[in-house]
Image 1 (tube, helix red, strand yellow):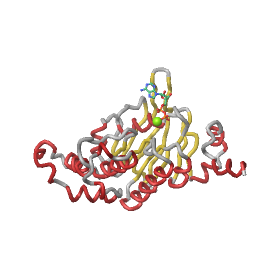
Image 2 (cartoon, rainbow, N blue to C red; image 1 turned 135 degrees about the horizontal axis):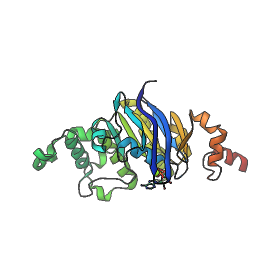
Image 3 (cartoon, rainbow, N blue to C red; image 1 turned 90 degrees about the horizontal axis):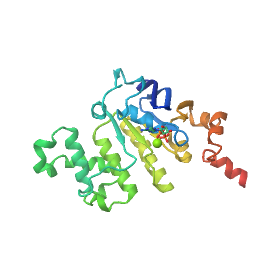
Image 4 (cartoon, protein in one colour; image 1 turned 90 degrees about the vertical axis):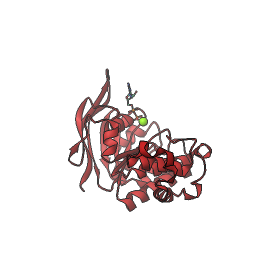
Length: 259
Ligand code: ADP
Ligand code: MG
């Protein structure tokens, strides 16, 4: 497996708090990789370092052979690392298709020269991305009236319109109903397969993680304590211990025990 992204001993300290301690990992080409761990484990801090929102205290980040460490979010995004946000970021006053068109215009760097007739540009391409996420029927609706799950899918279409090689999704299903969560992750898994991109995501619903992730990494108190296949992680004693309090990791077993 060749790596698209490599983190080498990245650290982030906030004063005395060591949020992330010498974490190293790789994201493989075409891989759907989950980063899990209890609240406060350092998952978002890791994401923010990969995306350039936070500068690592130490360590390095590479996209293939290019170093990303120290670059700002916009430069990293231009190199082909996309992200979706925990809070959806769309233009409420525009329609669904207009939001994707705006993203395409910005991707092709034509924002200021074409604004007066922006509505004509990239419409077909925008419709294509809406089709990928199953939103073509809602193209003419205003974003302000969309259901939360649909906004999340629109956000995914916008992220894809920047043609990322790697997509970072920090809790993409936060605030969604369980059925919608499975749906969004299924869609993400299909996109990874069909478009041959890589995705690194965090998720607290273990059913979603175990159903879709190709591989799982576990962060606890800023340290990577395990990584491996879904089966490896399910059976890892240290991981079980970390999750004992929450009890969400082994729902199947709990259900069996209750029966
Ligand atoms: P997770 O996403 O796994 O829930 P975070 O990365 O958000 O965890 O947080 C890891 C630790 O770093 C927590 O103890 C959190 O309070 C701390 N932390 C995160 N961001 C900041 C910040 N900007 N300033 C100070 N402490 C922070
Ligand atoms: Mg977080």
